Image (tube, rainbow, N blue to C red; front, side):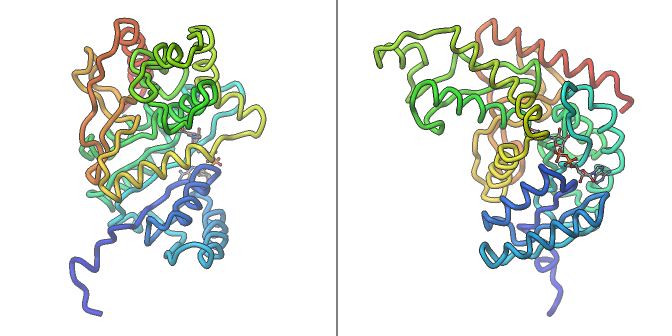
Length: 321
Ligand SMILES: NC(=O)c1ccc[n+]([C@@H]2O[C@H](COP(=O)([O-])OP(=O)(O)OC[C@H]3O[C@@H](n4cnc5c(N)ncnc54)[C@H](O)[C@@H]3O)[C@@H](O)[C@H]2O)c1
């Protein structure tokens, strides 16, 4: 076959670095979705990657024809998105920020290599602490900030919507509510804008003849914020929901959907917040971050968001980037 520029590009190649719980679950979801034509798995533990490839290949007859192989960083060339899930996982009792130094060192061996072979793709980070590592990846890759994304609070927002949906008795997809800021202990629920069918939650309650209880709402937020600790205590790791969130982000990119997602990216001029990665509702399309939406937050939410940004900036400041 004649080699042309077009035949050398891989519009739906997705590279996954780190195929443990999160990376392998994402690869499986991606294969079942049929969104990617090529999936390359890269892991320090090569035999683990090879084992995952074999298992995934045997899934193909039930799914979609997809080229899947265990590769190295040169295989990131032409990938639309490189998803990084490599690193140490959170241990019981350990905060996400405790992980930062360990995983920054790991990222020094990964991110420059990905950027070297794939200067035109999008980097999507899942490894924790995800906001700090998204910032680290932006620095280490020298890619435009719009093409360095963290999964951020896409997971927390999903947990929040699920719990609210259970409380209010509607489909979680009909609940419009966001968790912003850090994916972690300082995250912020945006109660002032949360709504069902355009009705703020107290109005929705009134229309249904129910009382609105801020105490119940506070409990829902605590369950959202602490969900990872609860799951890790019981099953050792969390991976299904984050993998589904990564799928949603990759779908928005590959299909150029301009979807509003709470993902982490580098923020500037946002209620006085500058030069830090954190999550806000963001329009995501084939170029990555199209636009970070400026929410009309109330005073309390602005203060909480600034505090969350402060926590992240302090950690970033402790790194030698
Ligand atoms: N962002 C989120 O919402 C979210 C949710 C769950 C987990 N996580 C995070 O995702 C990360 C992965 O979690 P997991 O449960 O899959 O962990 P895991 O231990 O199962 O997998 C990590 C993988 O990374 C690989 N790895 C380590 N160093 C590497 C390197 N230098 N190069 C290539 N591969 C390397 C390991 O061999 C392993 O296969 C953790 O940081 C975890 O905290 C994030």
